[in-house]
Length: 240
Image (cartoon, rainbow, N blue to C red; front, side, top):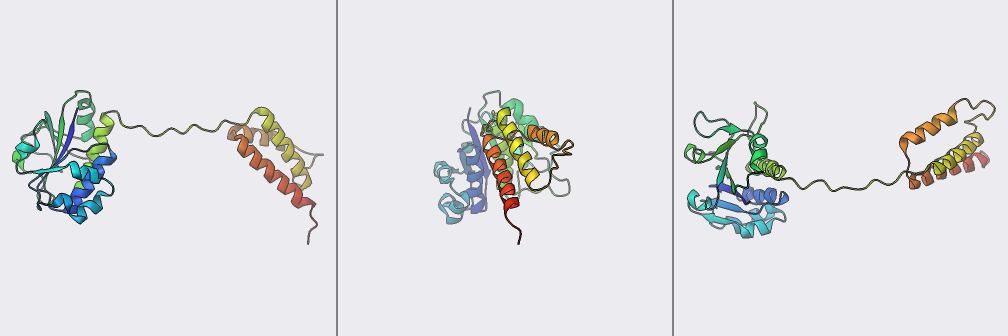
């Protein structure tokens, strides 16, 4: 399965660079420009600066004269629109359309119109679906690179995503370590005058329940015992 992002008549070099960056963070690198404003847009300083590390995507990108050239090899084409069209392909949200599409093995192309004019009707008509990103009804205007980022994210998720890196939690301290901690705290609380051993009430059982809920790690038990020691040491020092 291949994925291509196609920009029709992009007019801002920075947007081309930002588009490359948006694609790369989602693992895509096939970028085609149709009639860009500048012939050297892929080499312009602003483009490279806004790519911010995605220069490899720019190096692989190409500029073509016609949409037909850009669509070579694409079997499923998605337009991106801000408002639904009265005529043409069905308008769907990216998630609604892309989730089932991710299981088909199609070679997918995402088509983005000019920053100034958006998508032409004749280009939309060539597409299998028109993707409309759900936005605030009072302000639905997305920057080109922002729209590409949303579509790239939704498509990556439809393809299975990358998954968040998993960090294994530290093991909880065992019951013996927690019992030792409680004993240490009991001694220190008595020394600082917070616990009356003649009338302890339920202070220590409550602290026991607190530590059980917290499930401290061995390192955290060590820190808490250090706190208990510091309290006891402070209580032994003569007051000024």
